Image 1 (cartoon, helix red, strand yellow):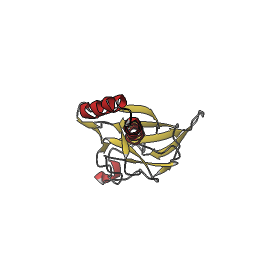
Image 2 (image 1 turned 45 degrees about the horizontal axis):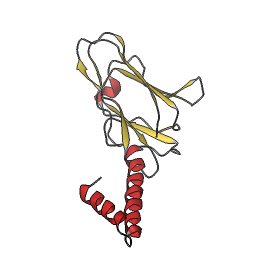
Image 3 (image 1 turned 180 degrees about the vertical axis):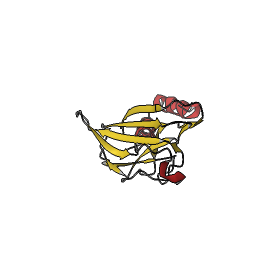
Length: 170
C-alpha cells in the first residue's frame, strides 16, 4: 500500500469527523484491488465454445514451419475418446509444399483436453510455437502459449518428436 495513503488513512481514523473519509478510502482501495486481479488472470471466458490454434501471439498467424506431420486432438471433459481436430499424418515429407497454413477453428470447452503430436519421417524436424485462442467473445485477441516450438533440428530421429497434452483453462 502507498505510504502516503496509509498515513492519511491512519491519521483519519484518529480524528472524530473524518472516519467516513477513512472508510471510503479503505473501501475504494479494496474494491480497486479486487477488480484488477480477475481481469489480468483470466485469458478465456468460461463460456467459450470455439477455439483456434495459431503460430504465435496473433490469432491470424499461419503456420510456416512444420516438418513433417501434425496431429491435434480434443478429449471432452469426463470423456475417454479423442476427437481429431487436425490430421496431417499423411506420410508426406513436405507439409503443404512449404506453403503457410492455418488450422481451422474447432469446438471445445473450458475443461477439455487438447493433445498435440508432431512426427518426423526422416531428416530434420521443425515445429512453430503454438498458441490457443478463443474464437469468439470479448477476449478473442488474448491467447495462451502452449508450446515454445522446436527449431530446425537436423539430428532429429524418425518418429514422434513432440507430444504434449493441455487442459483448456480459463
